Image (cartoon, rainbow, N blue to C red; front, top):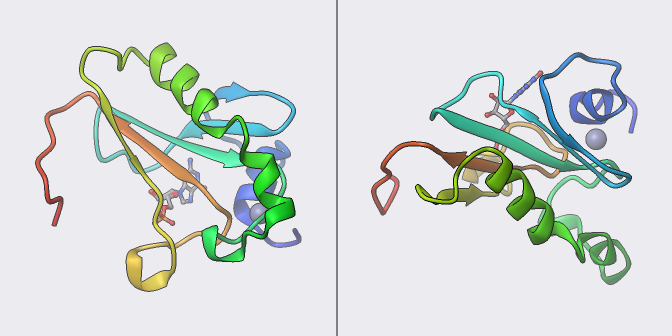
Length: 114
Ligand code: 5GP
Ligand code: ZN
């Protein structure tokens, strides 16, 4: 999508520190990490957020959790575990309107987070 910063990152038009890529997914380090490991996982096919999903688009997410698992294991998060955060909508903290999941780990985290 034109003028979407994460579409441009996935296309390599804006530099990022890539940690994973396949045909459908791109993952890179967050520019402002909130933990020792802070990775963003994005679909290459643009969607604003979960609220924009329909049944057809959802098929792209069949392997989403396996991709997250692979990235988390490669980042060394098996022992510490990790948090998967998907901010959805401006009031919930979403600032970039291209779906992204934050993989956050490498430190102890409390709950609730706010
Ligand atoms: P949100 O607040 O939408 O859930 O998360 C957006 C995340 O994207 C933020 O954690 C922010 O630091 C990160 N971010 C925004 N712009 C860029 C960028 O150009 N490069 C990288 N690597 N991360 C970005
Ligand atoms: Zn996009």
